[in-house]
Image 1 (cartoon, one colour):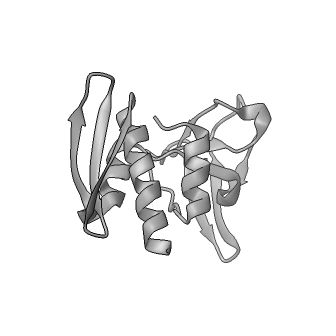
Image 2: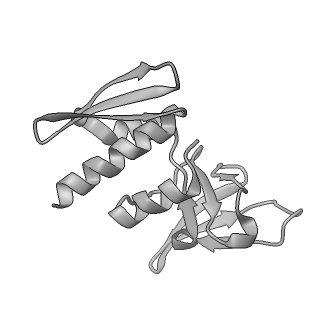
Image 3: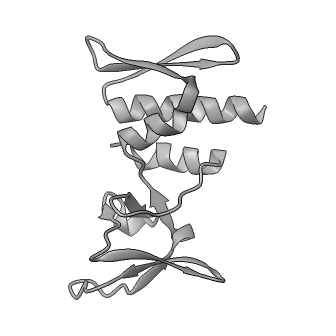
Length: 135
C-alpha cells in the first residue's frame, strides 16, 4: 500500500478519484494519520449531489462521522489500480533482490522505478508519467 505522502503527490499532480466499492482512502487530517477506510456498498458509499461527491458512513455507530466530502479524502490507490492507470506506458513488473522494479516507457524512453513495495514502485512510475504528460 502506498504511503499518504505519495498519494498526496499523485493528487497534486492531477490524479482524480471517482470513489468505487473496494477503494481505500484516508481522511487527510493529522489526527487520523494511518487510519484507512474502505468504500463499501454496505458501510461507506459515495453519494453524488449537484454540489459534489459525499462519502456517506452508513451504519457506523462506533464513529460519529456521517459523511465526508470527497475532497477531504485521500485516495490510496491499490497496486492493480496504479498499474491500470499506467496504461500503455507500462512494460513490466520485476522482482529484485530488494523489492520490485516497474518499467514504463515515457517519450520513447524506458524508465524504471524501484521500491521494496510494488504498489509504491507503481505509484512513483505513475507520478513520473503524469509529470511527463504535463510538460
